[in-house]
Image 1 (cartoon, helix red, strand yellow):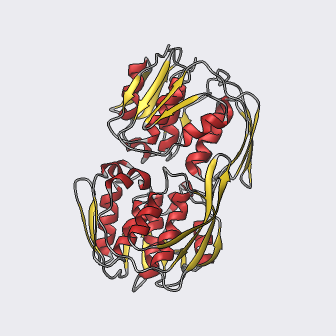
Image 2 (cartoon, one colour; image 1 turned 90 degrees about the vertical axis):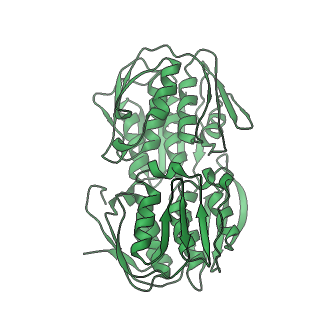
Length: 438
């Protein structure tokens, strides 16, 4: 199913989520597996790679830079690493589709290469802010021109990068990772200090590839000039994809669902913490390590949710999961308040306004604020809502159907393929009555 097709969802009301499921592999880790495997010495074998449009865009970009990559074949990818200085100039622009992670991380990596490159994307990606990476990269000596701070990014090669210390104004794993990747090629030690905790997949993967990295609280540093050694990677199921079914299991009646092999990296489990604070019946089973990342089987059962003031320290740990958490808030007794979440306004869409608009159409009292949202729990009614070509908005409103009084039509859902190929099939098997609208 191509993300260029016009696809609308229709969701019939009600249903329960039961049985077992495995959601696709982690998107953040899939991106990084290609990048790090390409730069390593030797052959890296990856299992559990997400075959969604976003991570496939990263894979194609590195193929375009003459990296021999076999697959993906049922989640299996084999990467013949070219070493830290083995990437070749691509024949044309590197089109990263809808993937902000690809663009921001590769901006750091390509700033240090010997060749010029240009990073482009679709309409959505081309509207997203890139100065958050290009400004600190310029301080390091990178030469990047933009379209008023947005893509395309035209990166000049043969620049000598110097190490910096950067105090990040906002907590962003993408900015942190971008600067660390540039730091691998810089003279001296590059360090980044965050105002809050963000996902640490880059740090974990550097260690997996035997590149020295130092983590001290909210500060991370790397010294330029070392090399990476190829390894085998097992990618856990993506908690951001599991989140839709965690909320669905909580809000639907008579649900008892087991989500298997889900990554529970402590920098990503905000969705579990928030749902538990709301009264969600969620338990972790069979906790173990999986390719350097903690994983577990997560069981969710029907729950009586209550509204809460979401703790600000959990916001960066659930930043991608808020669209579906807003659905949970709509089904909860009382009021839920989110603050300190301006980052949600510059995702694939303004996710705060997009969800508020849709929830109001479905009969929920939802008010967007300068940095968050206020949602009064109530009854979800039928209606037609817009996804704004945002995969997480599409899937969040689909899950709302489990508690709706009538059918929900969701427009422009093709971009679900960027992160969750097979969403309809998996959701239907679990008990959601969802189909593509004819």
